[in-house]
Image 1 (cartoon, one colour):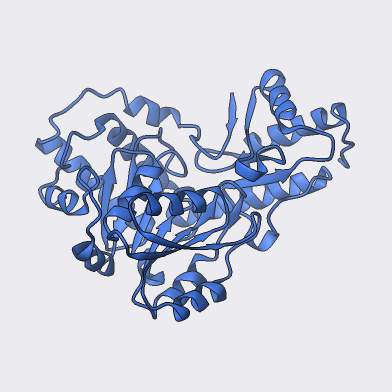
Image 2 (tube, helix red, strand yellow; image 1 turned 30 degrees about the vertical axis):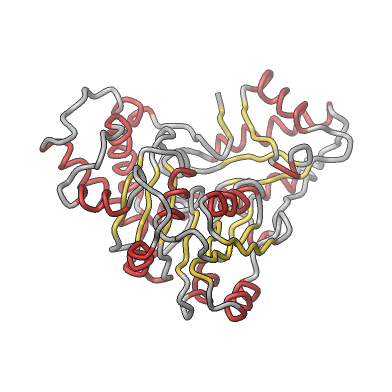
Length: 363
């Protein structure tokens, strides 16, 4: 099967094999060595010296942790949304009592840093800016460096959902000044769903000291207290730590620069291949994601039918649209454990299937 969705992504065989190791005492020396090792290598890929915590959750759990550890009920949060996952960040903050000021941009477009700066200038009471680095629902990557630049002069902290970005796309956490950054194991990290990784800056810790939202399982303070003892506060997902250890070994072998370059090369290659077929890309090239591509459907073709044929006849799994784009696009993931041959298989299948559905390809 060629699993070409934005996540969960395919898992290398050596990573799957690593998960078969026997359980160990999660309060013992063997696990202590493991948690220290994977945490330090995560810092290398985050490009940070900040604290990094590993939580047993999908990326959304990490997003919730980011919110409840930095805000109090009634605090104002500026949520920058360019799609479904930006909207999710806003919903999480609202559910826990934050006063959300939402800055929406058209789906398929990236956020304008100048508009964010204007909102911060207008309202100095904003405590946090919540932003999606890479919007999986639209295949758009925000210019996070530029956004961070306009947030830095203000007292607000910058909280980043980089679930489908970091590890595959450039993010210099310390240099850019990102205070809380969240990612999930099932994307660029090439392991199954179930872990989220969250970095916290000194400014993030200052926000934590004032935050009054309810938290227990997601508490940064507990995570830090136990990490200082080379442990988790609660029983960790031991098998996923084994998987992470092996996946990070593979990524270190490829090098950070190599991983980033591969995703950039494959993202560009796939988008060019799509255009050569006569299809379009939802995102403009300057902000098109190198981890997932959203492709508008030609008139008269329903994405569910296209996806069905790809699945049943070619063993290729692609994603549909979400929210307002549900029946208007299909999405192809190219993140993590992916090769040019995987993408060629998708392009070749589209070349066969689209004419059958009434769209004449150019190539």
